[in-house]
Length: 111
Length: 117
Image (cartoon, rainbow over all chains, first blue to last red; front, side, top):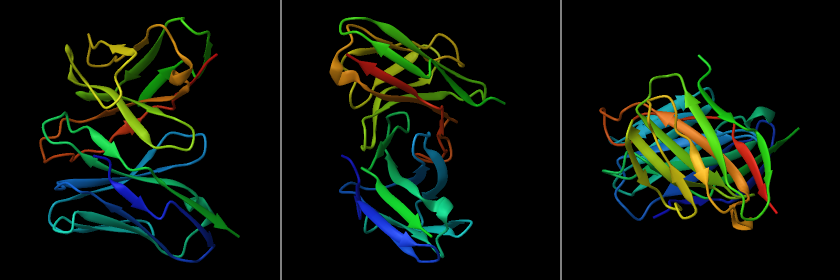
């Protein structure tokens, strides 16, 4: 089952903050976050494993709550380079760690 | 390291034609994947492989075939191309997930943009 991302799209001004959510109806063992710029391949941002940990990548951080089966990506003081589509991916157990990706959140940062 | 490479970058096929999309990785990764991405949509897994000689279906395998004779190569074959197969195809690879479920990042190739008319 595909994880659900919200919101579907966000428009920000440079310096503003945003939160992107990813929720699943199934138990989560980990959550992957990727960013895809227009016309390019997805690029890995971070993985969050079971344990409720938080991680950071520059001014982008994320949390993972396995009890609530959800993860949130926090973009702080957004920069123009943050524009793109953000995908969360959740692995399927006993299936080659294959990921099921959410539908994506389109983020546009304006000057 | 070149990472994950894909050829061709672009291709136009006529309905009913066949073609093979090539994917090669030089990171010695056991796991390899093929995704398709329709315009404005997310990634859908077509096939994956956990090692040479082992492949399995993903979410949308119909109309495609794969083989994995070496660790490095994972070609995707389209037989009898249909307009519904117009999409961008991404190949990806990752390490073996010994540290936990989905514990390793996936590295994506640059993609092949395919149009079937």
